[in-house]
Image (cartoon, rainbow, N blue to C red; front, top):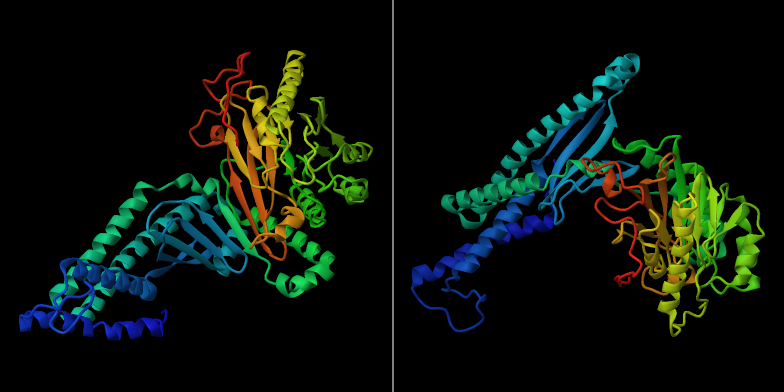
Amino acid sequence: MARVPTAVMNLIHRFPRLPQALTRRHRSGTRPPAGPALALTPGARPRPWVRALGLVAVVLLGAWLGLLVVGNVRVPVGPMNTTMTLRPSFTGGTKINVSPLGALQLDSHIAPVRLDVNVDQLDPERSRALVDHPERLSGLQDEVTEDIARGTADLAVRSCVAVVTGAATLGLLVYRRPRRALAAGGLALGLLAASGGTAYATWNPDSVLEPKFSGLLSSAPSLVGDARSIVTEFDVYQQELARLVTNVTKLYDATSTLPVYQPDPTTIRVLHVSDIHLNPASWKIIASLVEQYRVDVIVDSGDTMDHGTAAENGFLDPVEDLGAPYVWVRGNHDSLVTQRYLDRMRNVHVLDDGRARTIAGLRFAGIGDPQFTPDRTQRTGAEQSQELAGARLASAMRDQKRAGTPVDVAVVHEPSAAREVDGTVPLVLSGHIHREDTEVMRYGTRLRVEGSTGGSGLRAIEGKYPDPIETSILYFDRDTKRLQAWDSIELGGLGLTTAEVSRHLPEENQPGADSSPSPSGSSPGASSGPPSATPSRPRS
């Protein structure tokens, strides 16, 4: 049984004094002196809204104490022993805690209560029975469903009792009147019923398809040290960060259940990185992800460098040893010197001027950023130059399509250039803005903007909090070349050791959606491409 905090008990002991002060006015028949509305003096009678507010406070506090003390049930789910609990929450949802590995969060419902499921341990006998009788695995899913349903029903009953009892008991302690205590219990039951109804109305069973897994490498702080140690022992830091992402992705793969889409050998896996900005830790993380996810090709949408000087070229040397082909386009912090250096490297494919390359079964085309602004200046006509570059790329891809070799993925640096290829390719990748985003544009092309895989480089330390390191794994069908799903990966910035992996599905792969997109990659009902006079489109 959980302990009630001392501060809460002190608050409870003070509550009985309040109703006594509030009833003195009724006995004395005197009016309160002029003053603030909330000032309670001897002989003062509170206004109705003050009494109502006090009752609501008593109900909420009592309900919370009731849930805290007895509002949980122990439920065997398959071979696991779990504890289910309802907790007050502003956002709702379900949180599955797999201690000490991490937690799985699902946007299962929107209500002021959250369902917490703690996986306590595996039951040895039930686990051994499954191993000895593998034929029972076929019925395990139904068994788990029944266990969860039974546990949820028990939790609902216990929570009702806990909430009503807690609110009524606290109401009796505060008001010393049975009628007020019953009113508090009834109000608590009504609030719980309303919360349950809201949760039922907003219940999303498909939330399991897009889970969010979070974990913490508990030994990392002691191994990495403080900020000063990170500066002096940066190699240790980047190795620990790489180990962190490896461990978290393994746990994610082992503990999440994604019934609609599971990567298989027929899947092409693309690692999308962008805006590394000379962060040497990025190479360790990329190499770790290539090995962990068995990546077929890496796509870098630019700003690998910070100033594009020849002195920085040595930073690019690890690219040859990352374990997968490297597709690259020039960003506004990358120079032609940078581009020529990469173009001479083994296993690197530089995209520019719309020329198409087929790598790992996918046909890529891209164009370098027309601007070179390592000092972050804003030049006149920058937006127009981006639009012109995007239009050149779109024209080249239309020629490819007429030749019978359509492009599967376009790559640019800035989203403003990416918008010009809408309708000519199923997917376009970009970066530049240092935050992840995705949208389906007007003519059906999906735009995927990657965050900074370098955590914004040296600029990570300019703000109050370090920028996160962001990247993603894109899954393509080997036959259709269409995007099937993607995993967004976010690591804590400089000095932090948190990691989060979340699964996302395109709209056409959601349950109940039409699974046969149009050949051009456009959404159903959209035209196969923009007309000759392209209308204006909103800019990011």
